[in-house]
Image (cartoon, rainbow, N blue to C red; front, side, top):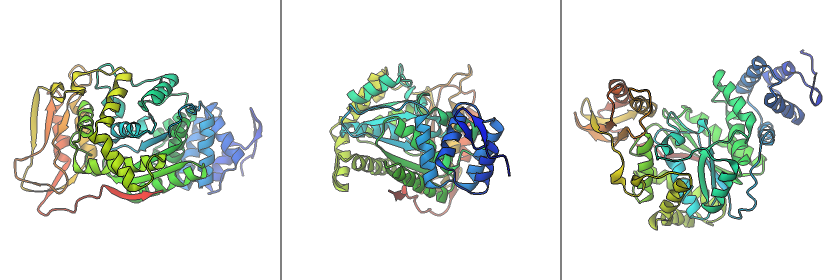
Amino acid sequence: MAIKSIIGKGGAKASYAYLIEKKRDGHEFTEDEVRNIVDSILDDEIPDYQMAALIMAIYFKDMAAQEMALFAEEMILTGEMLDLVDITRPKVAKYSTGGVGDKTTMILSAIGAACGVVVPCMASPDEDFVITIHDKLSSIPGFKSKLSINEFKKQLATIGCAICEHDAAISPSDAIIYKMRQATATIPSLPLITTSVLSKKFAAGAEGLVVDVKWGNGSYLRDLEQAKQLARTITRVARVMKRKCVALVTDMNQPLGDSVGMGLEVLEALDFLRGGGTEEMRELVQKLGMELLRLAGVAGSTLSAKQSVERAIEDGSALNKFLEMIKAQGGSAPWLKDPSKYPMPKHVRKLPAPKRGYVHNINAGMIARGVQILSRTKSGKTDPYVGVTQIKKVGTQVKQGEPLLMIHYNDETNLDSAIDYLRNAYRLAPRRPNPPQVVVERVA
């Protein structure tokens, strides 16, 4: 057995070797041990090799709900906690594990604000898959993705929504842990995902949380059972923390919506708020929006929540909130109000179906990777306006030569490489597959 204590800033405490051994053998940490671990990580007292070993032990041996709640609370206390008490409206955040073509955070922030809910969104890299929400919004000239805490609070008070980069002063210990998770291939650790999500969202002023756990080839969660387990874990730990939380497990085995690309996804979000949108986008936004409004208490029933979401789109109030948010954060472009003024790339090319059949499978991750490659220019910069549109979805019948999607580009430098990814993302079959279920499970 390792030596059980060392002398630290707080006096005698368990040695790191003992803590690693304790979790390796499947035991739970005490409240003092959790506090010591979090403090040692923040103060850079624990050596990297021992932090890596500790994180790996957690990855393999899991944590109890009470342990995770303690970890999340301690991580919150390592930084600033946003005091939004002066804002009397309910404050509910939305978190997504990230997916290809996912515009729902932009859309739901506006819908929530239009319905009287304050929707704080400080997004981190772990909330996206290949193309971040900040990449998308930064396609709008002048858009400011970094806000000070005071700017963030002021915008929430006046408009009701703000989307910006996570402030380093909020749950700073999480950034250190996340970096180590990347280095040790432990990103999928359910306890560490849970403590990360809850510490950041609740420290940023949220009273409740709606979680969209995406599973499939367009998410880092490839296993459905793992996604379900994460949804259950997050909601259970939130309850232990005495916070409101609802989670939906949703399909990400094909791109969400009609487009993938930075500016093109903003354009699609605007189209949705004007009453457009694909069928699966409308279903997902409606269900997430209903959860957000019911959790906030502004809708007393499923029916009234559904009607409120629909009304916010039909009367234009959600669109106006979105445009208000963009303007407040410095964004200005004629295509925000007139889509015909979007700087469409010079060239468009179809990705032809190699044979007749049904779209049986789409690797959404490969679509995102293809778009990412397409956006790299000869000068090494990123073109925010390129991407793909008119994506044929799973179950669609196509003829040989018919476009599976349309490719929009300005620079041919990486076109062939991008097309390879896009072409290999599609699988056709002679029989129509069962359509994917958008929402697989609800956990509350």
